[in-house]
Image 1: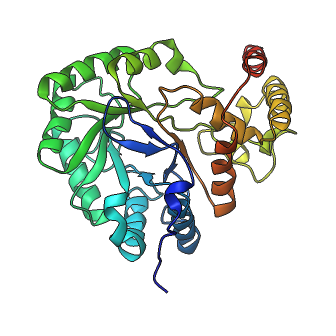
Image 2: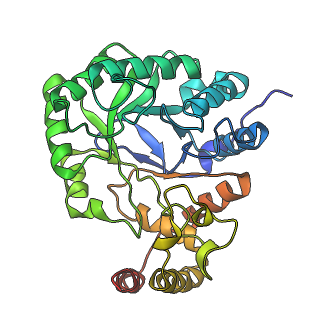
Amino acid sequence: MNYQAKSDRYQQLPYRRCGNSGLLLPAISLGLWHNFGGVDVYETYRDVLRVAFDRGVTHFDLANNYGPPPGSAEENFGRILKQDFAAYRDELIISTKAGYRMWDGPYGEWGSKKYLVSSLDQSLRRMGLDYVDIFYSHRPDPDTPLEETMGALDLIVRQGKALYAGISNYTAEQTTRAVAILKRLGTPCLIHQPKYSMLERWVEGGLMDVLGQEGIGCIPFSPLAQGLLTDKYLKGIPADSRAAKPHGFLQASAITEGVISKLQQLNAIAEKRNQSLAQMALAWLLKDPRVTSVLIGASRTTQLLDSLACLNNLAFSAEELADIERILGQ
């Protein structure tokens, strides 16, 4: 049976303006960093994408190296796009990135014009697209002039391969310089994608101020700190958890008794708000009007729906915010 999107999907969640642009993004966007690769179950992630769109999630975020193996998330998304979403392409915001290592040799990573243009061409082929809506420089390159990297983004937009340009993982100072270059070229920076959560707040040291002043959207990734800001670790490290695995970004050594104590105290506040810890962590990011959208991951539809339920309570009292700051400062 052919997929047909629900008619009431645009009444399901709020949309927020991306900086000073004309683009609106859903308050919650779906990232395909994990769970959509060649090692994952096709029907499971296909169902996640369908349910997301039915609930008003129009923005799907990818990168050239998402998988594993690298490139497989884009291939799988392209297959589902063709099967289920071809009729809805003009209702989708599809983003991808290049910057991390994608192929061997001197032209397979970082920020040269050669790499960025070649990588996007490959991404478009994998997804079966003529263009993406947003293309990001995934990380700053210490050895390539910033003028070259931003010049590549400008070229890509002018070629019609992307509608908007974005950057990810750039510091406040790097962002200021990148934005100025893009302005001179005539292709404004639409959005910045930083790592940001209750437990990782480096962006508050200047980057958020730059984005607010320049009218650039912010879309945090890893808002749940790789699953740490969920109920999974409230009593320690479960054997089947991400932290229990020898590989990955979340290491068991980072989950100390002090961290668990913080999580338990935060969870107590969330319970009083009739939210899970994860829902409160997402709502906490969205309290800042400079945050356009928050990128979530989902390995199954129940996880997706739980995250979307954060939108049922986005308001924080002054007392709640003070208590959260006290706990995080311990």
